[in-house]
Length: 180
Image 1 (cartoon, rainbow, N blue to C red):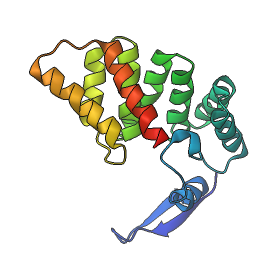
Image 2: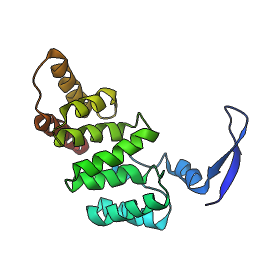
Image 3: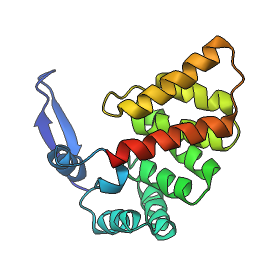
Image 4: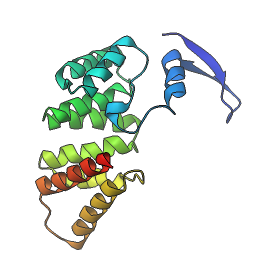
């Protein structure tokens, strides 16, 4: 992968960026908020993987994302997509692992925080879910944010929370939000 030097307007120093990062920056404004509408880059394999993801062919898409991550372990677009593929196939442990890796690079990634919490809840780890959701804040998803705030308020009040119930409530809010 070739890289170019550009002048960082904040520091005045030259910094190297890869061609992929350059194109990612150009496409950033075009991309939507839903993973199934996002693009993982201009690489033909990633474009194909994204199409498979949109079509619901999660096993095939996961294979391509995994292959990309073996070649490029810090591919920050393939990580959440791989996690999403695992999640949609019911592999919540695999999904959680992908998103926790992403959170190591982007600790405040709302998508990863939301879905890591969901994966934790689906695995019966209510504390893991709550820890991730405490960090989640996205005003672009008011229905989801409201549901998470209600769950956190119930937890602070001392209510017993069932992990499965929490996951169902957040997932229902996500589905309603996407229909809007």
